[in-house]
Length: 294
Image 1 (tube, rainbow, N blue to C red):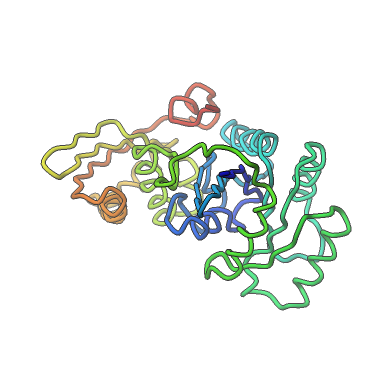
Image 2 (image 1 turned 120 degrees about the vertical axis):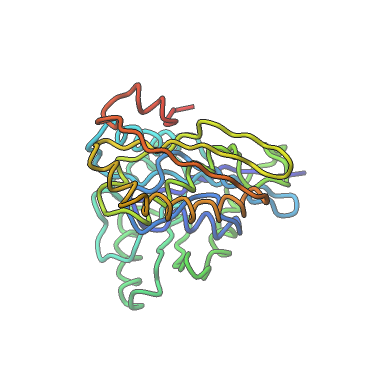
């Protein structure tokens, strides 16, 4: 009999949730950057081993939202916790439970779902700090297990998967054993471009950008893609483009390399920058730029 289970990966921004997902899957299915709030939509990663299929759901980092886009991201995470078989709470080593983590634990308790506590980035802290973290969290909730890891280096990731076996149920699989994510290629390409924006631009500007694939043509072993980058201010548009187009060319070059690896074909990528003022405060614009609850 085959088994399957849905497991949400939750936590505050920038604790390494997407890095953990990519490490489990063995491929890059979620973009990563050092900037917080990189993940905006729920990302599905499918890990099939033998007769078992784990469906991991990477969620936006929980934070105090300042925009309607932030509201959407928080709602996405909370809704995900309510519909899974288990939860992975990813944290960094701290001597006390933070407010955001306390809210997540409250949600886990109220839904009666089991959870694994994953302490990430253990290569950056002392063992005594990890011990204090375990005690602090054990005092507020009885996790099914606690696993210290370094998602970046892959250390302990296999133990996380092993601990999640308790959340599998006898069931037919929901996905083919040949796929690792249910994301459409267009969405993955848009996310790759946004990742390069996050990694290339100054601190605040990337949070006000969105990427939409406007045209996609395939012929004779090549793919031609036209993508539009939306920003909130005319001044931001100038920065994204750069002097004589230097910045947009660099973003396009970095993105094209990853897209060609993803699609395994030659890619022609055209990027255009549009201004849509304060789009993060408009429910219509948020949905129109690809952030939908479905």
